Length: 602
Image (cartoon, rainbow, N blue to C red):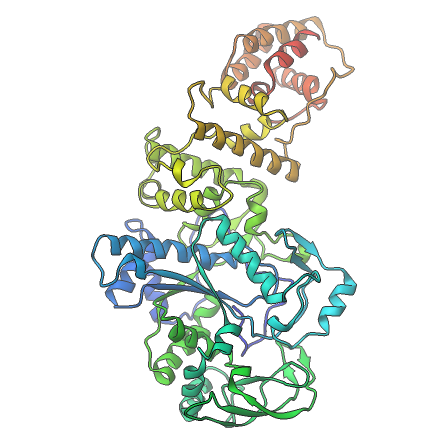
């Protein structure tokens, strides 16, 4: 979310976002409201899943079973924005579980997850990069950026879509987030602030804020130094130029109509960038304006009956504190149960579109299954995480172990892994099966017997074969897809091969193997040829990746060859290079007849 009362971040910069866990828990920057801080202490407890703890507070404090998130549609809807949607999903499921166990005053049908788009906020700047209609990050052409900059200061709903397509900037951003939510199987109600204002949903909050003007001023002055004695908690869309202005000169509240507000369109500070007003003076309906952010956020709690909301630590001090006071003193409601989450980093840095390290759900689903992303978002939100997409195979391996533990093939390494397999995995698998990007459907789902998938990096090498039958053959020869495997195992395995291969190629890493179609123009001595012959025998006999790897060592020693040099000769023979991924798994992933023929034609 963007705070209208404070300088906004550059829209080319995204909030930090997540991945592998550092060894120690990141310390908060300090100053969080004690209520929010205390509420989150249990989120780090190894004995209880953080979402269960949050749901417990909602029930114990008699809050509504409505989970909320929200965002201002300013730039790329990246995985940091998605944090609130994903975290909210787990709390929603925890509330539903409690309701199904008949331990609550509400039913599972009463539990909802809502997400607001603060689309009446003004456009503060035009980012260098946005997502296109397919969810891909694209750089905006310079001429298009200049066209869009003519709309600075206007609400996002009045700004054209970035690529000159139908709809507004706000629609474009919201649709991208909705597509991501659907891809991961999250059932979320999306609400437009602009629509809520036009429908009159904000009328009561506006009336309370203006009717109790002395209270509103007293509260805001505790948190905002620029709020003077003439402060009015309302902003107007100018009828002449369409920009948002904060210069309210008078207002009238009536018992029937929403009321009117008089204004003077003067310069507005958009986070360090001043937009000149057009000078127009006029009177318009209160439904044609908006509350400032610090009043709008708690107004959303009242309108949507919110009982729980996660938010980043940037709101823990300031926006949350003022929101609580405005909720209680101005609107006369109780605030929702809070949860402060840490931001993610990417490769140790804050995400930046201009630096090329912003990632979206849609983009990451090109490289991993939705279950893997959902597993990531289920991790303790109080720990800062460094997400490294180029090394996402570590996260995939971690997820695969959870499925192995759930299936009973492995013993949990620690209490956290046991909890993830027993308590969290069903929520992960159920959501992914509902979404449109998993190879599994709800009918396939058996949370106690997850599909079997090949190791991620091995799958990347199997993907060298473009033909599906060849891929299946490689998986079977490596014992990762038995002859009697279920159809769901076959589909999950082939999907794993596709995404892993795409990951290897996009990152051009060691698993992006390019096998030479013809034998390289290189000669080997008799000892090396004999060792290759021994290796061919093991491959021809159906040796596993491990057995082939062991034979590389044994054949080199048997023929008195330098082991490292023999490995290099193997890479040269197949890849035309002197190094590569583990040779045994590589040869096991390739067509058996091809490998045997290449080894023997030396």
